[in-house]
Image (cartoon, rainbow, N blue to C red; front, side, top):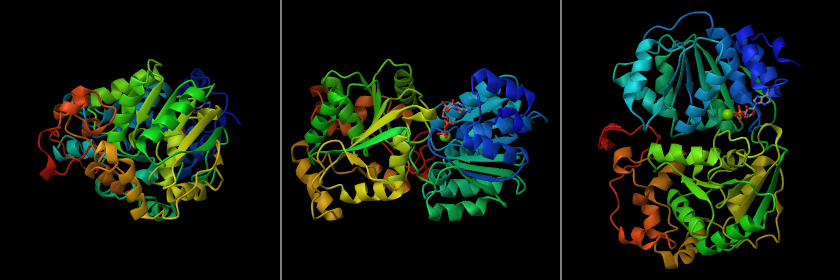
Length: 470
Ligand code: ADP
Ligand code: MG
């Protein structure tokens, strides 16, 4: 199969050739012809299999005809995180190099002014996180009645309980006759039912059963103790012992554990950065770029980095914690082994993690081999047992292992939360660092919790919680 059989425009085909792609991936081959025929599409394919080009390429071809009017975007792509939105913008620029289309990125954490200027000039492709998009709409700067194509990337995430009110609202502002495209690597059945509400007679393309992990990723579980210092030791042993480790993303469930682990690894001499939703946007971008450019080897991250990020040469992913949802595991490990490359992943599993571990194996439909000996799961694996074990593990570091209100909210809504950027630009102000055992004196002396708000949508604070302009 070659790209020129898919109905794409000449300009787009030339850009694809310049990208060095020899043939479309299965999701591209199956989805693009339907998108070109203006059908609604629900596309499920594994992480790293080119879902982005499955919508960007036909959209560019379709939008070649016609012109954008001021403040009336012609198409809209919704993404769950700012970093992912920015990455999709880069894709549009790459594949749209021969088209004269205007692309705008509306994400939180950065100034409104440049975004407004772009909207005023007219936008063919608008890429946004829902909160900032609605902010612009509420300010009267945006009309969405001209949107002919809507893409919801990471669709199951965008339809979960944290985002769904915004998505419903946005969809009501769009023309009923629009074309709608949904893509994801996971699609729990209950969310799939919800998705049907937004799609009209969709073509359903399932390249691989939802939540199937890529064959190119070697997955291992690693037995370790409950206590935080034991987990950090187990991680360091892995980092020091893996011969082909080039670089890695290390996922934690709690934002403050991200900060603590980052400090700890730095103190042990690792080249390391951190990324989580309570950091200001400038730090987030710098950290990600440093990792992408190879200036740091390890990136400790919350689930804000779990979805969609395409950093081609990530050799390893570590789960410092068993993920809260099994879907998160699929997305986390999908940051390695992209576009047919080899990747490896290790997950630390403690005696208290039976429930989460079983849920992951059951979702992905395979057994995860143990790196060494299997962990002895404790008989009491319910919520209370876990809490007791957490407490036992955290006795020396205060309430460190207790999940903060913002972490709980993050899980409940499957959202990242963030503090207003100007109040929280200092990474030391992260409360997680304060309680961390490995924190230096500087952090320990800071006991005052910064004025932070946690909110469901990364970019959308309910008005009553808004303490300062975003
Ligand atoms: P997904 O959204 O499915 O996780 P992405 O769209 O981020 O995957 O693509 C993953 C990687 O695959 C990107 O680095 C992209 O450049 C590359 N890629 C996409 N399409 C092709 C193709 N047809 N041939 C080779 N590489 C491709
Ligand atoms: Mg993607």
